[in-house]
Amino acid sequence: MSTATSEDIASLIIWIQERIQAGDCPKDAIELKTGVVVENCEEFLRAMHEILERHRKDKIFSPLIDDCLLLRTRIDELRASNPNETHTDG
Image 1 (cartoon, rainbow, N blue to C red):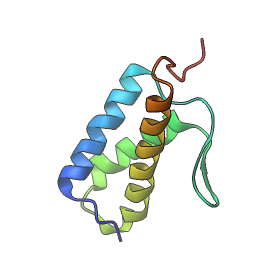
Image 2 (tube, rainbow, N blue to C red):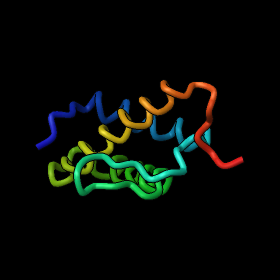
Image 3 (cartoon, rainbow, N blue to C red):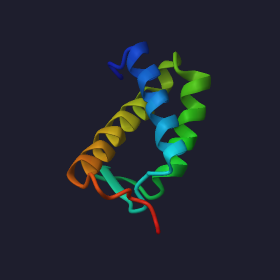
Image 4 (tube, one colour):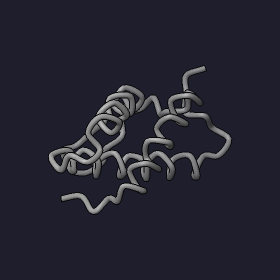
């Protein structure tokens, strides 16, 4: 079960909105953990945004929330290691 607080989830929703609006989601697939790969980060984030907005208090979505928090960490690590790269096509 996720240990994410309501503040964590609210912060995650804001972060997702910022990534989508900025258009700086990675274009390459990202491996979250063994056997879990996000092929299209922007689509995953769009879907997660909808889920979080509608079901943020529903415990059944805890694994998805954890995956989204892990994806945020992975994307932020990529952005920190390549600050001059936008991670977008063109």
